[in-house]
Length: 118
Image (cartoon, rainbow, N blue to C red; front, side, top):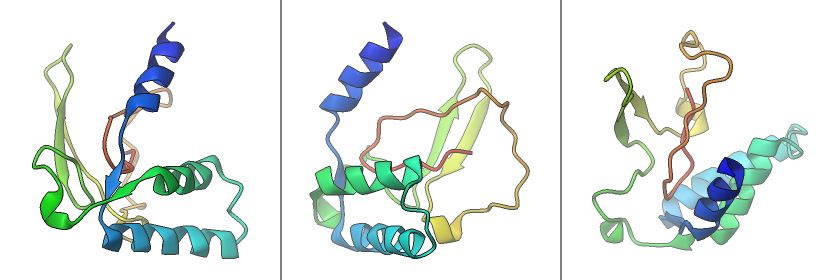
């Protein structure tokens, strides 16, 4: 039931992106393809979302939308613990930082652009 609900929510989502951000993410996908990573699920999903995205001007992005380089604070409703995430381009990701989540934890947000999972 939860998987079906998730599929319905994801089917309804609208993706918006600026031309500049789309170009940067498409360049990332091309780079990944050059190194033989085009088969990865995350690369395929990103390419699919970019194909479906509606290009908007930066000034037309609503203030409540998570965009590239946005900082988002999430609150665990059970523990009131807050965690801050920053949505960055892959080249800006801090891949050296130690993982702080448990193996089965997953961050899911409905956003207009991909979200960096940490």
